[in-house]
Amino acid sequence: MSVNIFTYKNSAFRDIGLLIFIILIAYFPFLGLPAWEGNETIRVIIAKDMLQTGNWTIPILHGKLYFAKPPLMNWLIAASGSLFGSVNEWTSRLPSVITMFLTGVLVYSGTQKWLSREARIFAAIMTLAMIGMLKKGREAEIESLHIFVITSILLVWINGYLRQWKPALLWGLSLFLAGIGFLSKGPQVLMFFYMTVIPYLIYRKNISLLFSKGHLFGLVVLLMVLSVYILSVLQWTTLDYYINRWINEGMTRAESKETISFFTHLIEYPFEGIASFMPCILFFFPLFNKGLWHEFRKSISNELFVFCVVLLLANFPLYWLLPNMRFRYFLPAGPFFAISAGVIFEWYLKNYTNFSVIETFKRRLLKIISAFGIIVSIAVVPVVIALKLSFTLPLIFLLLLVYCISLPVFIKANSISLKQTPFFIVLITVLLFLIYTNAEIQYKNIDETNQRTVAREINLILPADVDTVYEIGYRRFLGITSYIDKKVLQLDYFSEIENIKMQNRKVCFIFDTEYMKRMEKKEKKFFLNRVSWQKIYSKNIKKSRGEIIVGLLE
Image (cartoon, rainbow, N blue to C red; front, side, top):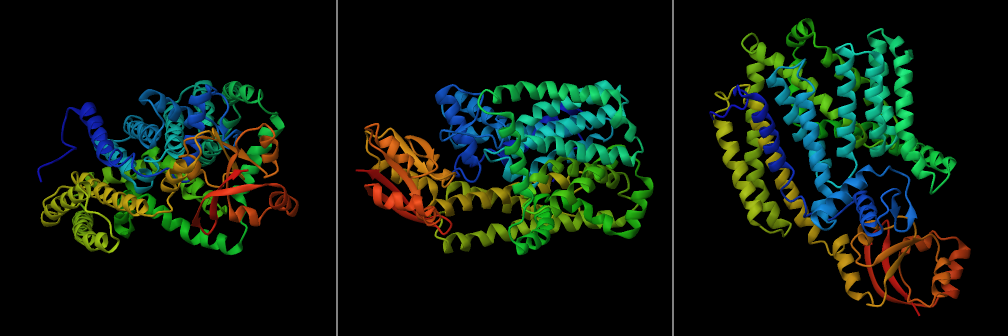
């Protein structure tokens, strides 16, 4: 137990090496094994289309213009696929891993003026090891890029503000980055930025900075950056349509179709936040001690800590109180949550000998986490047997590794220093996460209705002379169509098939029974009376879609 990641004096290279180590053990194992799920399929389909058509300007989803999200993540996935030869599960998720690593580096390097080296390493490794970050950083999704963008913009702004940059430089550089960041997730970047900066300026009684000429200059820079992208979009659609698309997206997020769902959201959201910020959130627990909290408040004077607290307090209620807001939208606050925890951890280190409660917390935390690791490594065995999963070599290795690390930590918890504690907490957390990931992959793979299996079966029965498969309905089963070998185009109505048939082409289409139930009477009548077709494949997938059917026009 002599490992101490914080005592090396040769700082930067070893610290970055530690972040690389965390990335290698936490993000790369099993990265390419899970099938694409959720919105991953949208990014992947668009990226594949970009590589096939050479059109990198406008996202195309199964032949339809897609403006719900800007194209930056699609570009990164397409670039990764181009570099490695194809867009697959591994290459599509690699950009997320890289942006998570860069976020960790940003947290480490962008806080140097206000945090000690120990606190910066703590904040960086906690950023990478928080459960919410681990989940999103391993997906071909926008979230990890969005987190990186928000982190870079806000760290640049607070660095410039506290170093007293000229307003033109402060706002110009920050909003230039915001303009580029707009290409990751659109207006949400600007919302998060201003929902942090404005409350902070109000708190510091410096709201006049918001109305300065420097801010006006920054807005001009922002508009110039955005205009480059908007002008390219206007070659394909109108500005009115594009703006309305964004307004509709925002309204959809803010609406709650059922009252019960809103109250469920209010209850579940904080608990989801606690789980997403594990294990970093555990280091806040000692401050529940009144004496310790009183001393901490009296002695803390870190302005970066104040900025992080304002960010958390200003943004969390917005995402919590608006219905349909997923916790992943709040995840850009994660790095700043870790930074604030780093400030607290630094204070613990300085006052370790003065407050026995800190030593007690350290010992109990190590014992609880290591005991949990020991229990899981044993309890997983009957679970694997009960679920009829396999004891693969990686799973066996992980179970043995977490046991062999957790047991010594449990035994020697008293002798492990506070400086060493974060490393062991992160290591055990990552290993437990990988055990869960491996078991989840196996469990989904044995399901005969998983999208990759269904797509494989469809590929086998598709006629060789069919070059295009038509998906009926909007985004009905992208998890399946993202794996179909043929070109896939979306049709809004069955009646569109007739026009395609008139071109003397063999027409193959895919739909689900739930979509048929919701069709207008006129459309359903057309399909039943005027379309002659044969069913070549069907399978029940899930209640929300019913039976998926592949048909061939006769």
